[in-house]
Length: 211
Image 1 (cartoon, rainbow, N blue to C red):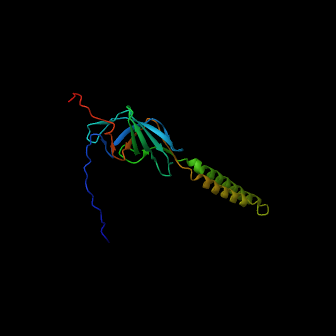
Image 2: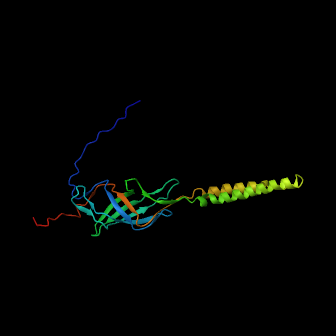
Image 3: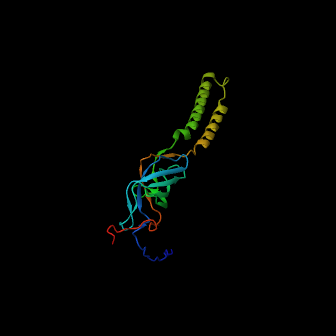
């Protein structure tokens, strides 16, 4: 066995934190639009709490700021969270901020929790019904054999095999129907800032006493 070699790293000074929205900051937000994963599309949320700079001195994102996001991917089987990339924030004063940051849960987990419909009957209902038809055909055939004897036997094998083939084909066409995730408007979500954002070009602290 060989030891794992890890590269060394060097610490750097970030500089002035007065106007810095630091990577990893959580932005609490309330959904303004409903999300349904059947189709990709845009969504919007409203910031529900003021967000301050890395040193806590400067209000960078006011409560009521709007954030536009995009949901592009459908859910896969077994998934219960929706991935949304939140692209752009606009404050009430007209400051636009390129975020390009992912949505997160209350504890920082990736994605937004959704109510999921797995479409069981759409996926398996047709196959189940066709299989039942085949079973009924088998039962009728067996009963006909017992009551009529071998001389008057009517064969239901072809019908049964056809029903099985139809059930298999129906299952192939419906088994891959993806689940549908829904998040209602008004739901509280988080956005985790994916990179440092510098506000120094749009904000300036002014001494209220003039000195």
